[in-house]
Length: 79
Image (tube, rainbow, N blue to C red; front, top):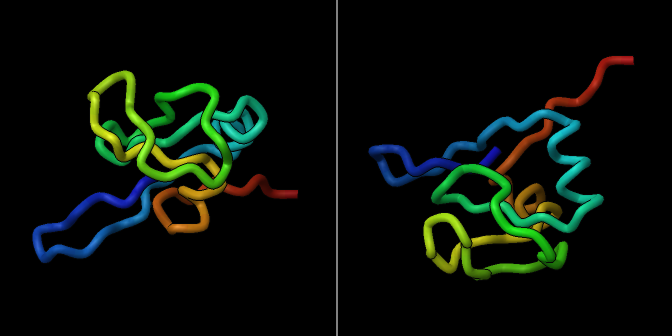
């Protein structure tokens, strides 16, 4: 999940599956808010401003950082 800019300038959180989030954490992937997906490998958990190999913007953040910043929200599995 990533926050998407609304017309009023506020951001909303993007939902991702728990499995996708866990895979991103385990493999050090980075989240691109422009592409709204995990697009970059070898991204530190607390990274900010990394280059996106898909869109070229320097907005990629680490998976854990995306969660802490409220950009994404994993769907938690039910027990």
